[in-house]
Amino acid sequence: MELSFAASSTIVQQVAEGAPADVLALAGPGPLDHLPAELRRSEPVVFTTNSLSLAVPPDNPAGVTGVEDLTTEGLRLVVCQPQVPCGEATSALLTGLGIDPAVSSQERDARATITKVELGEADVGIVYRTDVAAAGDRVLGIDIPGAVNVTTGYPILAVSDHELAAAFIQEVLSGRGQQHLADAGFVAP
Image (cartoon, rainbow, N blue to C red; front, side, top):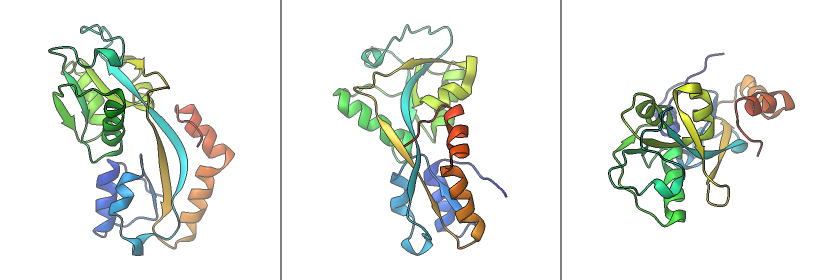
């Protein structure tokens, strides 16, 4: 089995253009809108969920304590591009908060966004909680209150008729698969 990782919108574009694949697991449902119906061999199923978090450098030089600081003058805020799930979720968060903060840059995916924070090129980034957990001590995570946070369902579906596609999806949805996801900080749907 070979795994490939990229922004969800990139993966869907590659498969739509003929890249070989058996299963798509995406960080949000939006990119599925661009997957031709004839490539879908199963209905998408939400296999896990993720919520947003603020990521700041470990020493937090800008003194960010929560979402209320996102509109601070001069704050270097980085977010994901709007066409990727992290960007869609960020847009929904900011709309829900009723704010339109100045954004220093929009990155191609959550990994690129958190890298800007790790390198000290940003005061704060908005990414998924699991990205903050994966970064370890290279960033400090600041929770976004559940009442205003955005939760994204991650869909998985077969894009080939190969018997291993269905078996892989079944494994991801199994208790063992869900435990691996929980260990990485994801939440069951």
